[in-house]
Image 1 (tube, rainbow, N blue to C red):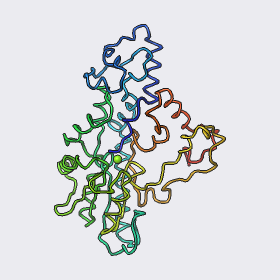
Image 2: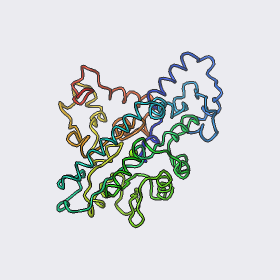
Image 3: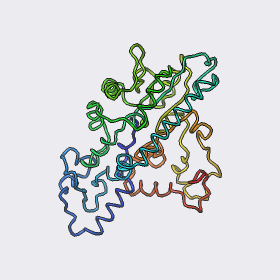
Image 4: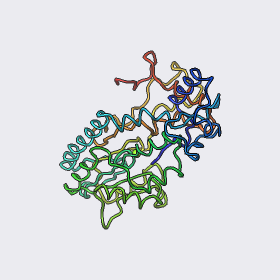
Length: 338
Ligand SMILES: [Mg+2]
């Protein structure tokens, strides 16, 4: 999983909770989690096993607020809403239709890394793993309840449990592709040392794997296999025609940067100073060669706000994210409805 949560001390919802709790309950701010919150470091509560229902509030110390609280809504949406399930199944049903189209059209390829000649190569699809075929929302829930943070000390044990459920629709789609003679590759930014439990998790759920070919391509498994996934798409493209890319993060499709990078510069923070147009990455490919699964919890869309987040206080981070929102009077294209 390529996550940025480890660099994120607090997000807006958490800060809003802090403000609300601090203003409404300042006099009684010594909560049941006060001991863990008083440590001053995000993730401290995880180490001390804070009670699940506690909302750590330490008088004025932003860093002590449960750093996972801001993911509550997004996590709940993926776990309990019919809408998330519907959106995910919908995406995979579209993928099935596109797969049939792609098989009929030998010029069809989803990968910029695909080079001629490729038309006669055996077909393949590439899927990301986290939040594309494996659902890590139980891990996220664990962080929320324990006031934990994403990092090797929490992520590694979760992966090694190999108990993540499948993202709705993913199993049916990959089995369909397998039946149609399409090789299914999984390109993940899980570290190479987590490949075995990841494979075990996928196999346990019934995802198609291969006996003789490595179809689970992890980050760092070979020299040059970095987090951009470009080298791994090139690797698959050498011997296959890549019909579809399925993922939840822009990096699952392209190494192009996220739009919105202008917010990183204080000089162009004012809406009137922003570029007149920004490129809309992938507009020609979404829903065709590129199938995206909704992930409201994390992703590279946070990059703009999080760059340099190690030096940011939670309030500064909140200000950055507030500037990223797009009111109607903004000239920024790509706003809702575009
Ligand atoms: Mg992912």
